[in-house]
Length: 259
Image (tube, rainbow, N blue to C red; front, side, top):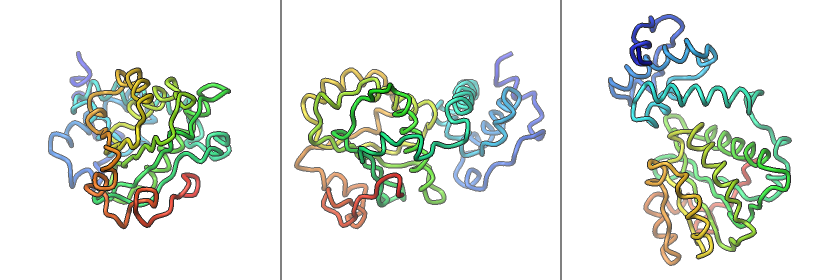
């Protein structure tokens, strides 16, 4: 018996929460049905899933094209990772002091549909001398912060990767792939769009190594901008009043730890 049939045989009312209002308002009937099936299934496998809301379940379902079996595998993997990697429920500033010291991630403003804007300076990132653990914790810290800043009804953020000055000393392939894995496996359907700005030729060589690890849905969200069209391209998605100063707008950058 496959997972979807097993889920159908579980009494959904036992321990399953009702769909959130936000889910009910903008979900299809198929999505609502699949959310109930997914919740019933994962709660039999990991009771801690009761703590996760229906919006979370819907994101995992959408990441797997509403396939309950595939979404349950992905979600249970996420729960196992969460319990081991973030046992206290969150990453604190004291867990990532070296990463924060580089001042490489900032937030400010929102795009035209309310998605918060995250700016990353690639030339300020270097391979960690102490391994990947702190950098991975930093990725989780950043994603949790930007997700927490989302207004009601919004589930995604916009990223801008500024690569001016990027060189081989910044080519942390293992770090990039690790960050991608966290985003894609544990924060599905959170990235709305990623603008890549001022990518030098040498970056494209490294990009060829990273590209195979990017899933198809994420690839469609990545936009490489022409150097002479940065502001005009950003303005298609972001009002000028919400642009950071470095891209011709009025807003100063806010370090991620102060957002």
